[in-house]
Length: 142
Image 1 (cartoon, rainbow, N blue to C red):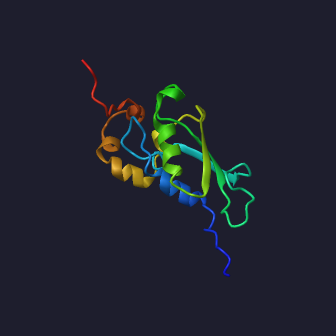
Image 2: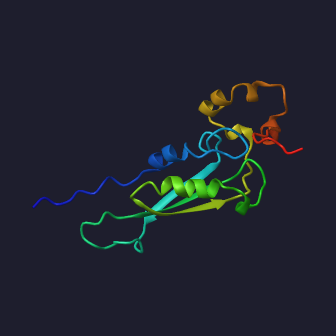
Image 3: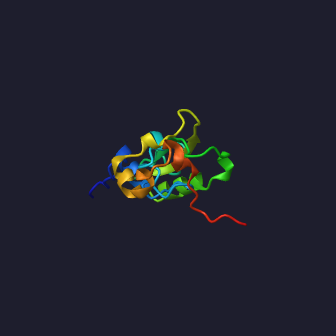
């Protein structure tokens, strides 16, 4: 009887690729290209369902540290839930912890070259360097 093979463990590149589907609530660009992700780590989850049972693929617990483009309370952003839901699609991930940090503060210099190309006109305007923080993508109520 052939032994079951386990899928290759997730890499940081796999997680970053998935996070490109998660967008900042203020600026229309994904959190990876905006430079919001500071660190990603993963570790085996010995408490995951099926852990230690032969034939059950091991699960990973993922921790992501990021900053936001604007200062808002953590409970006010749907971004954390979006990240957790996106990574829940991976069978190898049992749980995702997201930690928001205020330092180092985000600035437009953290945007990747790909992100700059996508933002195009927003970055080439003659507005001050911190103008991106002031962009509103949701209509305001009057």
